[in-house]
Length: 81
Image (cartoon, rainbow, N blue to C red; front, side, top):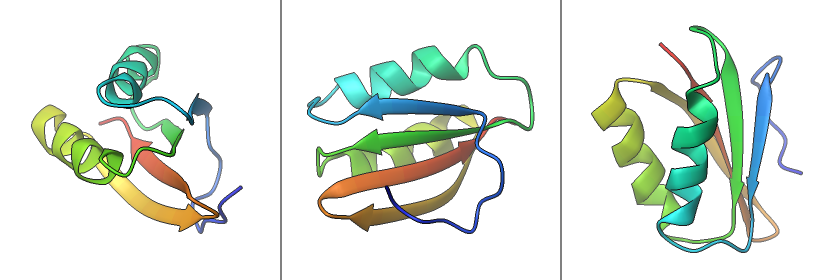
């Protein structure tokens, strides 16, 4: 799993092997259950998720804290605001 400087992760969404639009669909669904301030980690292997997750965060006003990649797996850390 990717390493991060982010502290406690409240929810992990595993979208590895899913292609667009499923990583974003899974992210949006899981985000509904988060409280303000909580952090979600999304794992994805679809290269398109890089731009899609950034665009989703900007559109929804949530924070994309960090993005990393290790062994072909993208890890996105987002905070609900």
